[in-house]
Amino acid sequence: MSKPDTLPAQHPSAFERPAVTVDLVLMTVRERVLQVLLIQRDEEPFQGKWALPGTFVRIDETLDEAAQRVLREKAGLAPAFLEQLYTFGAVHRDPRMRIITVAYFALMPFSILASVENDERSLGTIRKGDGNVTVLDFSGNPVDLPFDHAEILTTAVERLRAKLDWSDVAFALLPDEFTLRELQEVHEVIRGRALNKPAFRKRMLDSGRLEPTGRREAGLAFRPAELYRLRRAA
Amino acid sequence: MSKPDTLPAQHPSAFERPAVTVDLVLMTVRERVLQVLLIQRDEEPFQGKWALPGTFVRIDETLDEAAQRVLREKAGLAPAFLEQLYTFGAVHRDPRMRIITVAYFALMPFSILASVENDERSLGTIRKGDGNVTVLDFSGNPVDLPFDHAEILTTAVERLRAKLDWSDVAFALLPDEFTLRELQEVHEVIRGRALNKPAFRKRMLDSGRLEPTGRREAGLAFRPAELYRLRRAA
DNA sequence: ATAATAGTGTCTCTAAGACATTATATT
DNA sequence: AATATAATGTCTTAGAGACACTATTAT
Image 1: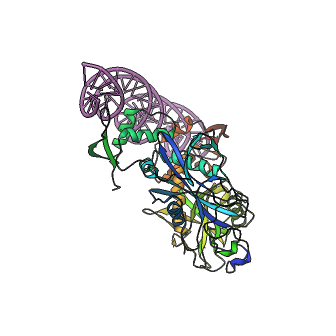
Image 2: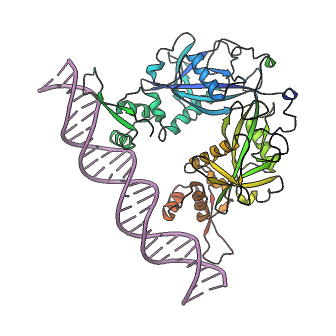
Image 3: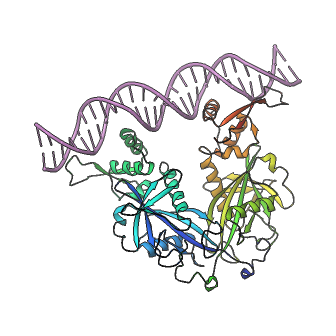
């Protein structure tokens, strides 16, 4: 907190300080699959490897601001859903020096993320193993993440699953207007299992968080579903 | 996380680094009231004020280790339940310099905590206001916490409440052997409302986490309740 | 016996899953 | 009309709250 331990806090140089970074787990749902944004590292260590985007925290910015900056500078995106996840402080998690990282997790609908992929940025597919998760690249080959990024990602997926039922995270993965089927699909991808349609619809509609737009999907070869939007918080 | 932003990470002195501390919210339940451990600050700023215990993170210890050290050095206690809470990084949260703090929250049965109170340590009573919480000292007078400690405490109480139903936090507030009434009391104090006895008992017993000891309370003027213990995780 | 709490049985209500049925858009 | 999915109705099951009742211990 704020109370110097033994060394005088007034002389910050009197003792070694850990560095502080922010790492970002930006996830999306694309075609019934959970994906995560990866950046190709352009510096050592692990140069050329795919990793979670991150940055050092500047002396005059908050942690939230640093996370937003990563989103903006590394992915060219504005924050949709962004929340602090957990702080990782293993002593040798970075081979260079002592670095404590505050992990954030962010969510975006794939429609907005669709354009970010290029040589330096890509979306890895998240596969759940037992206890932790693994990442596959576009060709289906496993990606092994540097540092403790696999652990960070696992924590993020767990958090996403835990928040699914009592928060609005699912809506952050959908466009402004969406059908109940699309919403159910997002829930099913995150939960990793099929859900009962009538029960799901009733639960969602009874929650009072959905607002019918009056419009419907278009361009389909079958009955179009009604479009809903998230009711703005009262 | 680990990728230098613009400045070379190999030269840590090339840019200003935030300091990192750990603050601890140690809570207990005492006579139907939620309490928190406070330490009288022996240094500026806010010398003499009651505050959450904390320390700077050493270069060679993990965050968890720093939190355990606070518990040991500031309260003379071994960790019962200890978990990372949230990291607070407002730029001017400490008037001296930029300090990022990783807050932890810990739980103990009051029976173990009973002896820690002295001139420098005391237990403040937590009262829930709307949205945040306030702290009262032993005479019932409000304590105003320095820095952002009120916000940290509010976050801890929210987390405790959120974890009550799906985790074992309640048991960390009770001795090894306890009655169902005592367990219900802990739940009621944290939830802030009375609970239905038959439903509570059934829910707890059906959960399979409780193990009857065969023993009963003693020294009471009425029918003694059976003692249970938490079944060791399978 | 009395007092005081431990512990249980019953009824009701709500939420969700399974399953089947009806409705409606495009081709 | 055919097709594919949207949307709904019914039945059942599980869990929790309200309330009342029975059980057990010390004095």
